[in-house]
Image 1 (cartoon, one colour):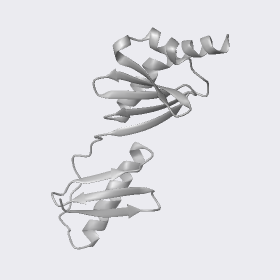
Image 2 (cartoon, one colour):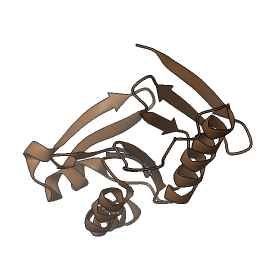
Image 3 (cartoon, helix red, strand yellow):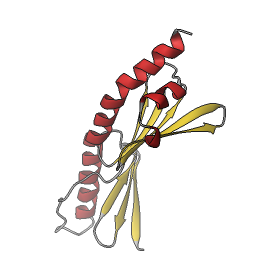
Image 4 (tube, helix red, strand yellow):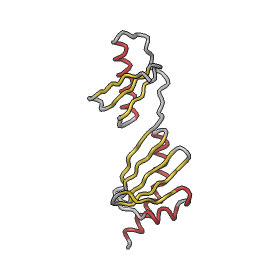
Length: 147
């Protein structure tokens, strides 16, 4: 597979430009930063002698989001409140983790310390997942703090 690696230190992103013309950008902190980075890379390619480069079909394929609830969780209480087949408890190092499949294309790893990693196809799906799970997490928090 032929590709060129482009690092943009000011934007803190890395771009992979494939021979097919597809561009994959990683490291962007927001949708706007990803769009700016792709346009910037397209502009670099134009200045290198390829004036027919056009910017089209921008889409998010995979988004990894981080979320901190700022409170500790009772993961067993969380699992009891959601469908059992969607959540699985595991031990990871010093803390307990819960793997939770929110939908067919969105999954979360939730730690007992309140840190959540969300893997989804777009930022919109990640926001919807947090909004639907947050009330259940608050109930799990109340159980921990009342003990």
